[in-house]
Length: 525
Image (tube, rainbow, N blue to C red):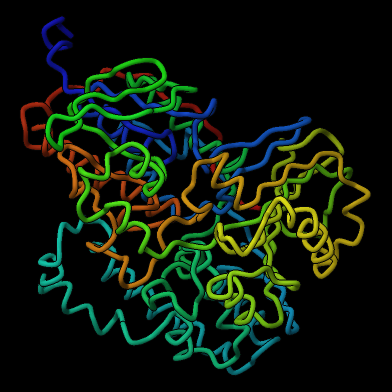
């Protein structure tokens, strides 16, 4: 490439090396943009990174990897094969659900086996399974194009195609209400709605659209990437750098220089960096209130952000364990006996439950590489309120640790305390202060009807020029598949604005990278 072409290349600055930022970096670099990614931490991945200690490795945040189709398409666009770059194991059963009210289900995508699992709890509901899957297959097919396009304002809602879909959306029903059309037993409804916690929401408040979350798991599978979900972002960073992307670790962005409402330079710990397009992949509320003067923001001023609803948080224990729990599934979800009260405490009362629901990952039954030989890892997550004056985590964390360890007895783990070799704890206060997540709300802005589509922060950020958003805080929302979808939308908008979209002259810049990736084939566990 000539020196002139190098000088004339468009520049993009990406704040945050999470999955959305890395996917955006790859897509922009593929079109010939000079991309710099700035990450405050010493590793890539953001919440989708690996925490290590004493030879144990844990996913910091997401542990479910589902619907890899979106990332597979992004890799393909950039000249890579996801299935050669990443070793993934499809889990069967996907997870075990244990109900405090009695009974359990080993969730499987094998329809006949799943009918048997459901029938052990509610025989009449087993016959509704096929109807539920068919209904959601139709819903996903209809709404997928909507979730793949940006929304710039209310006028986008007047699209005749979208209006035709309203009967499928059933806006008058919550997720639990929608499931009530199929399943009478509350436990079965919970088995297909606990996934609303991926959005940080209660199934009794979550919009009915999100029944597609559980459907995606059964239709397309739940995967474990060998090395953890953090391995996904490690691989993406490696490929991005091969494409010419510069990833700056330990290089926190301190602010921006503006020409009117356009960001012209990024000020980071390493200095000043000129940019033609700026992509925010950091936590939306935290980055806006810290990096952009309030006077430059209208729709998303500090006052407006304070009025928004944010998701719950999580209390985390990452435990390195002597020996293994061979009878414990890779994923186990315990749903407390009074789940609705548990959710009310989290979302409304903002108090801590004495009988919390929880999730445990026992990844070493699938992936022994995560621990020293003869040992294993336990990842324990309890949904809790986001940061509030009602809870002092400096005082509560020790007590809640004991509650968390006691709760493990309800899934058959009676001896965890004496087997702990390594321990790391994260509370909402840590998410807020150490990981820079607004209010410690680990699932970002809540996914209410008042905060969806054009009412979320938009992929082309409306309050500034040349600024784009990716990640869980923008449209379409939280969860790895939709975060990757947001990256596709935001990168396309940026390329359009830079004159480098598919039909522009800049699109003819060739990807010079020809080296082929290496990987073992996918397998099932």
